[in-house]
Image (cartoon, rainbow, N blue to C red; front, top):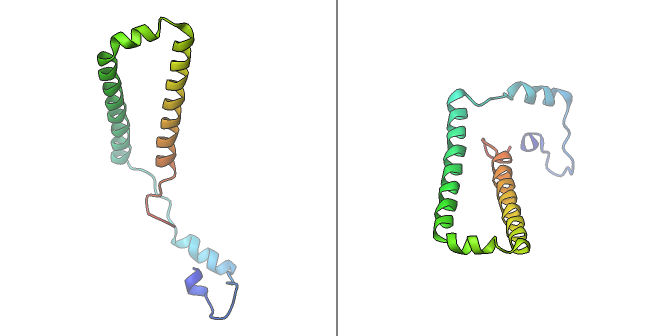
Length: 107
């Protein structure tokens, strides 16, 4: 709209009500269809299974060390707090990445 209404030498662009009406007529609201919803849900489940599998492998490799960590209550609380903070921040980062991604590019 800015390029269409631009006048050389002017510092402002005048936008009228008819311009806004024209723009709203050209806009469409699209929703995810059933296929896209299924795909996104499967992708989330696959990512969760991948993360849980990775954590299970790590737990199996370091089982004796982890068991010894939980013998000291202060150390175990610090360890669990750090793990929860890391997982919460990772989850928020992934959520923000998906939530703020524009499907049609920059509007």
